Length: 140
Image 1 (cartoon, rainbow, N blue to C red):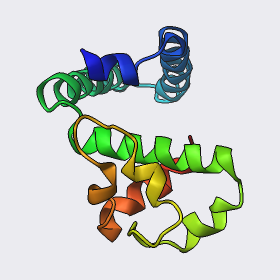
Image 2 (cartoon, one colour):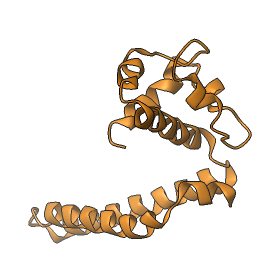
Image 3 (cartoon, rainbow, N blue to C red):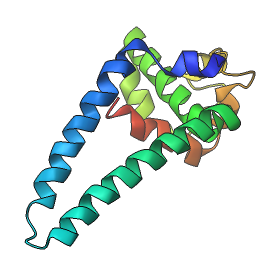
């Protein structure tokens, strides 16, 4: 439950239904194009199927795996955002860095984040693991 309190905020109560409504409007617009009623039903059923399994994946990732890779990527994004909020000049360091090491100016943000008894720093030493938070920083 501790991880859920850190990942889910009050904003999620309002933003999740809003995003689902927007997605439903998009799906409804696409579903109305085909003349065949069976294809329309496939759009709706596919949308509901995807939404249910996204929630199921989130619950499994959060409560069974205690965050897992997804949690570490999310924490990495939060660490990068903390670095940018402290000094926006870190954007060039983020763009040039392939991974995190002790010489990297971003290391303190990853090393002291207290993520679930595991340093995010160690996970972000791999270039493939550090790529995901860098990519996720754009929409965050």
